[in-house]
Amino acid sequence: MQFAVIKTGGKQYKVAEGDVLSIEKLTNNQQPTTNNQVIFNEVLLVVSGEVKVGKPFVSGAKVEAKILEEGKGKKKIVFKYKSKTRQHKKKGHRQPYTKVQITKIIA
Image (cartoon, rainbow, N blue to C red; front, top):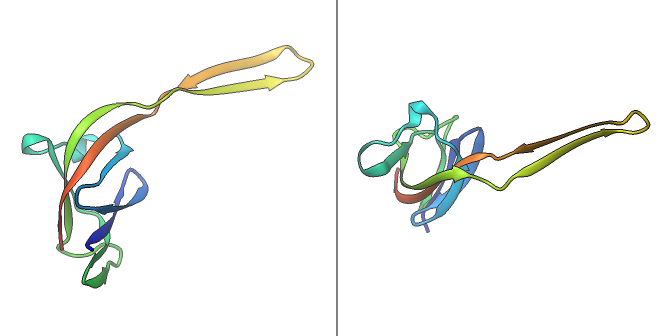
């Protein structure tokens, strides 16, 4: 079984070919190339028969993915309340995400 650990959006994800995952919205420096493909160069670990651990990244390794959709997640409500002073504040937040499907792991 071949899998890799990639770093994107300040988080780390364990991925294998064919996986579909929601990640933080891709920034302008990670815009997709042709046909909605995106390449992740920050690969921390690759396992394909042998284990390759990067310091901090594995040299020459990359993960190719296809962008399926972009959107916003469910709304999270933030409610602040102070008792006895009639103070309250209600806010909502929807986190943007990008849904990708892993197509190829190149070690």
